[in-house]
Every structure is written in C-alpha cells, then in structure tokens.
Image (cartoon, rainbow, N blue to C red; front, side, top):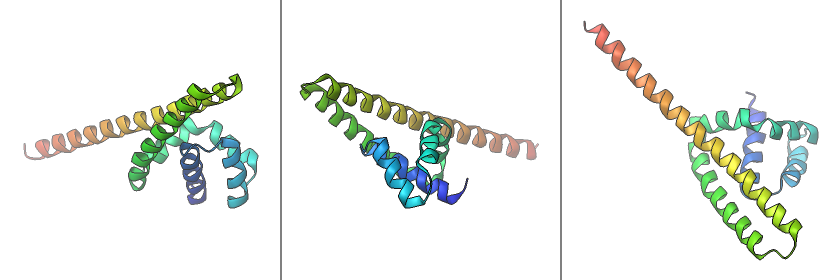
Length: 135
C-alpha cells in the first residue's frame, strides 16, 4: 500500500471516529491530499477491506486503542443527541452515527482477533519446528 494512501486513510478513519461527518472529512482530505472526492468516497465505501489492514500494522497499535476510546465517546454523544432530539431527522442522524461507529468498532475488534490467532499459530509453528529439530 502506498504511504500517501495509508496516511489519508488513517486520517479519514481517525476524523470519522472523532465524530466528524464523512462528507466534511472527504472535502477536507480532498484538498489536503490533492485527490478527488470521488476517490475518497471510493476509499470509504471499501473500508471493510482496508480498515483491518490499517489496524493490523504494528505501528498503529496505539491508534487502534485511541480509536476505540474515541468511538465510545462518539457513541455516547450520539445516544445523548438521540435522547434529547426534538425532531426525527436529528434522531435518525444520531442513530446513523451510532451504526457507523459500531461498524468501525466491529472491524477493529475482528482484526485484533485475527491478528492474535495468527500470532498464536506462528508461535505453535515455531515450537513445533524447534521440537522437530531436536528429534
């Protein structure tokens, strides 16, 4: 993956996890990274493919923990907005935000579980290789 793509996807995910609306994030990043909004929307639509990869990078382990904290804060604020909203549009918007944050959160959890399983398999393979070497 290209470093520029990695940077913009990281910033996109981080900004949306902070509670910014995706359309605001796309507009800002299009200017910052000199790419089309269409390109960024395409990235966002395919996030189920790159979010686990992004979170799997060792370098971004702290990012995943920070993202989870931010997602919890976003969900709390969205539920609060939902409970206090006086019109249906605000309630629907708050619920959409909750659903989006839950989707991102589930991708993060799933990617961590897969990485832990892979590390365990690697440890078992190394152990087996060492045992076979001494036989």
